[in-house]
Amino acid sequence: MYRYNNYPGKHKLFRHTYYFEGKLITKGLLRNMSTPNPNYPVLELRVALTTHAFERLTKFYCDGLSLEPAQFWNNGQGRAVILNMGNATLEIFDETQAQTVDQIETGQRISGQIRFALQVPDLKAAMERLLAQGAILVHPPIITPWGDYNVRLQDPDGMQITLFQKLDQNEQC
Image 1 (cartoon, one colour):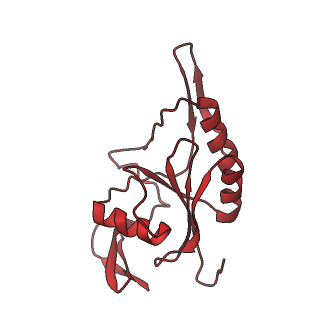
Image 2 (image 1 turned 90 degrees about the vertical axis):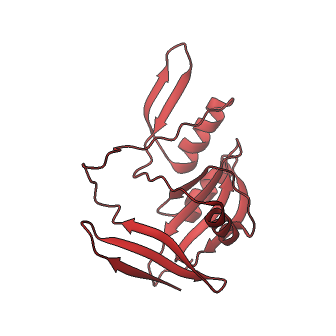
């Protein structure tokens, strides 16, 4: 069960709350993420992964998520690729919230300090592509208490990845 509560302010904000195992959980203040705001003090978030298997990890994310490289460097001092992954947010969890999310998505505390959470339009298709590229299924897909369809995977270097799909009220998986 979840509900949205309106809070006054300059922007329309929501506090996303739901019940999990009898406890009221507050996911936090959320703003409509579909509207870009040029006044943000940070205009872009980039997460940089360092790997010993550059080709393998690049193929994993490009083929597994159907991404095209936005930029590529190979200048004799190393290689890098930038993959445009749409809107980005930085979620900061305390240990209790990380435990709660891991418990919902996998049944136990399992992720490390960093975990990707990627919204995809078709969770089953993205999951199948990533599994074909070498992902490890950590936990099968579930419907979360807040109404998303989630699956937990691990990339070939061990990074935990949550794929999630927003579901309409009438949509069933």
